[in-house]
Image (tube, rainbow, N blue to C red):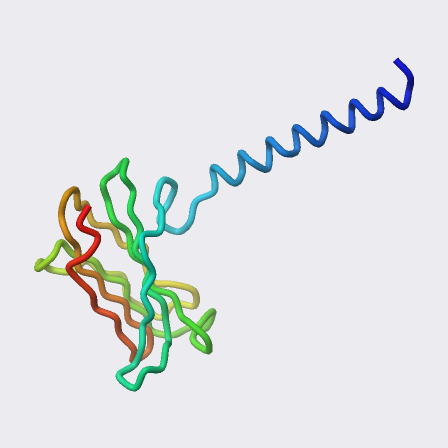
Length: 137
């Protein structure tokens, strides 16, 4: 084989293997809830005056049959330390929550909920989103 063809073959093999590595990394990537969770829906967290201060995200993992919630800051409240709450419960039951002064997000908080509805709550500064029943898996 000529040197040019050898170099081209090596370069091609390198690109293919780099593509495989990139695909494997993307497939194995996971967010704060962990692997196997996918976003069901996100909800704005607003003050009574309508100012959006956060986002409440609800995830589901069909393998573990658990929901997960996270609360993020939004706009001026994003990536700044402020009081946040992420909470979840089976519909009508007591909430499990993570609360505190966080820079990025509150949570993750998990609820085992096969074939059941959940209630969720997200709070940032003085803004709240409380929803349910939802995600009746």
